[in-house]
Image (cartoon, rainbow, N blue to C red):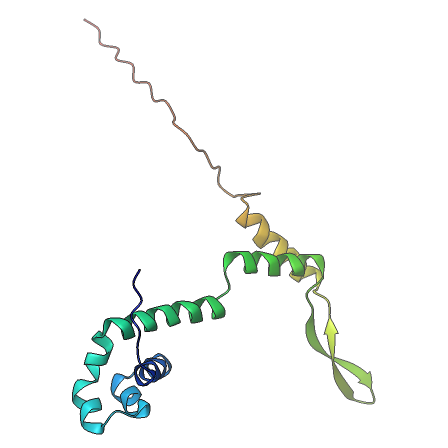
Length: 143
């Protein structure tokens, strides 16, 4: 794959466009003239180098922000094992409370186990059958 270089001003435009979602405003913030930003900023988005930069950067941001399947399974496992902690207000007397770390409740552990079990198909409400089921049709034609 050929990656086309973009200049610093174009990169700044692309970064602002990712942040704002508005080509005209991104062009203005990147230092393009008001006239160019208003009438020609769409050309920046059509530039192959800028377009590729935006696509690659969006993919990076997506992978940083969105939990993948492995991360979700690991998190559920930590809850099930009591390794993940939450916070709760706990009364300490005299009408005062403080925030304390607490381990998952039994209900939270059961829910995590249920979700993991469902993911691995450990139990289902319906019978799951894979494969071919032969169908035999007999013709009982009396002559």
